[in-house]
Length: 126
Image 1 (cartoon, rainbow, N blue to C red):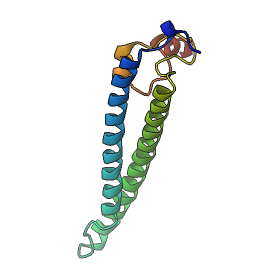
Image 2 (tube, one colour; image 1 turned 180 degrees about the vertical axis):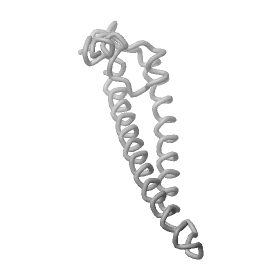
Image 3 (cartoon, rainbow, N blue to C red; image 1 turned 90 degrees about the vertical axis):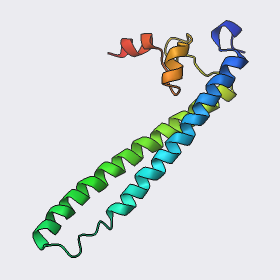
């Protein structure tokens, strides 16, 4: 069992859970926007334009698809990290730095709710 002083209270965990659930919902909505933008890139209405412009458009379209694909991959990872944070809330290990074993600051967790390391531990990585 985790020492009570080394974990957040149930009330704190409930507050963090609300933040995480809200972030997951927003992240999922953002991912849908990214995916729909990607799908719209497939038909951007250059069928009746000059061949030169169409070539530029296709190059731009390829870059846009790659950028959207990268955005989608990052967004999916963000959602996965948030879901992992939610799991840690459920098993009451949320907010404990995986390097130092100390509590991660509340302010940091409110801004970066999927954080697994304290600022102290992040600074040690540099």
